[in-house]
Length: 285
Image (cartoon, rainbow, N blue to C red; front, side):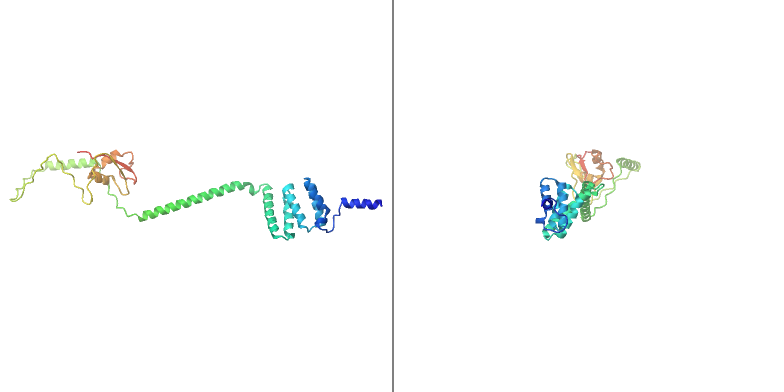
């Protein structure tokens, strides 16, 4: 009787570790759940292993072991194994999909925990990818702007070649002096007799009134002749001589505009489009 009682007590405290029984009759499974409630996770894991020996094809036990290994014991390799066993033994497709998600999560965590893991530089790699994407967007915008500028340039009418700048004022003065000397040295010429029916020119009523200089041939409008200082924005093809002709009616007065804008015109022979020029009033000679 005593021997039978000892065997009965032993059977209750130390269940068998071989054979196949259902989960609801598996004593190690109940003990594992009790140790897990007490937060004795290492003891719970050992009880789960004994429970698997009694029923190695139990999907529920593999799931419980996988969750315990991943969340409490941080044994990611063991968690991946038991998740995979659950997917193979489980009959519910939705829970199988969930287990696959957990498998990928555990794999990433396992790779990140390894030394020299490529995931250690994931943040830096993400920053580089974002910067590269921003540079690509900026390059696309610049290409679009360049294409639009080329199209606008192709649609603009052809601008006539700019007239060469007039010679400097000093050369004009020297030329005028030479011509005056030649005229002074020439012999006097007798005036021609007037024709019989010719009319003599009548002097103007106001001798102080000066004759306005006619605009050169080819111009469509008379000079502006500003009475006070004004401004003009240079366009493509403009030269100081053309602007002087427009405002003063005389190309040779380009020096007035050049002196007033010396700081804005680095090269008097090359006028950049968009340059804002100060146009002084026409000086009396």
